[in-house]
Image 1 (cartoon, rainbow, N blue to C red):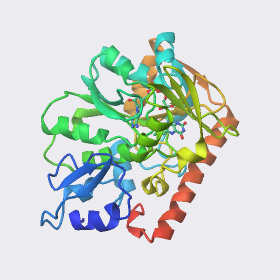
Image 2 (image 1 turned 180 degrees about the vertical axis):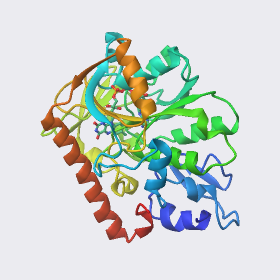
Image 3 (image 1 turned 60 degrees about the horizontal axis):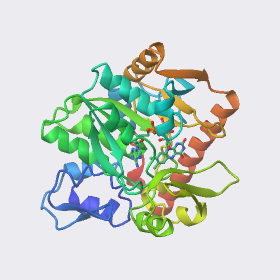
Image 4 (image 1 turned 45 degrees about the horizontal axis):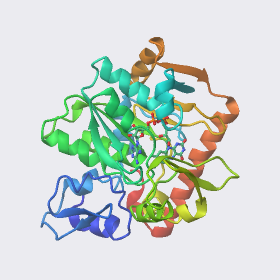
Length: 350
Ligand SMILES: Cc1cc2nc3c(=O)[nH]c(=O)nc-3n(C[C@H](O)[C@H](O)[C@H](O)COP(=O)(O)OP(=O)(O)OC[C@H]3O[C@@H](n4cnc5c(N)ncnc54)[C@H](O)[C@@H]3O)c2cc1C
């Protein structure tokens, strides 16, 4: 295990920080500056939780899989899972406020209503651009946080804050693959906090996110208009679309992609492989989600919500499953090349 100096040399100085908030929420020597962790001065420790919890330091994937699923993956591309299908929120009101099919929000509403969790750590935003981690406890709070913010969010920091303050009760968490990885590391290695209070982890598919700097760029391009929803229409559109309160604004995707941080380029996980269940879009089919059921807990919640008529399901077409596998494999290959290029062998799963 390493400490703050290793974190500095292997992660922070190479701009590989994902801004998840795991380290900055536990250590006064680390600060979040423009969405990234900055080491103010070394604390003198040779080993630290800052290094242990970071999603860009060594990952003992078999250990995390055994701990999460009780078994190792048999599918090297999509990770441990029992099925892949399509789903959407049954309630039109939820779909209307969600990013795609509203499956994520529906499952969270079900978990809260049935008393399976007391709160849900989500990523909201008051201007629609900058992410704001939030602990939601009511239906309105969950729906207010629906839809995707594309900037990296420090939402793991919010979970850590709640664990340390003994607040939040039994929690659910929604996050991108790097956030889910940080949280699973915390659950596997933290000995003082009651980490089992995080009872449900919903992962989001993610090819890339945007650095904090993209916020200024988007605000300028949008002339201060409040964003209701961002979307990336399927190829060949090559657009990044903002639906604002004053209409639709189209930006060239390549301009937006220039804000993808190095931390995304080394990421090997497109489908949040350590989540209880993972949710993404269905390319070319508006209003639906692709869902990967992984843990027993994730499957039970999903099947119960489906039985109660809160989510509708449909089989995922074979070509779409193949496409998903291809996209996931591509991300792994790109990540391996990038890690090789950086000589970042320590980032390899061990
Ligand atoms: C940065 C990013 C990149 C993505 N890339 C892809 C992709 O390449 N392919 C794909 O299929 N899907 C991708 N997704 C997932 C997709 O945008 C939807 O979130 C997912 O399909 C769930 O849809 P839904 O209608 O069920 O979501 P909703 O019911 O609207 O719920 C969305 C949830 O996401 C949470 N959220 C929003 N922004 C963030 C954030 N920055 N960090 C953590 N949580 C957040 C919200 O709090 C909300 O609970 C990405 C999401 C993000 C945030």
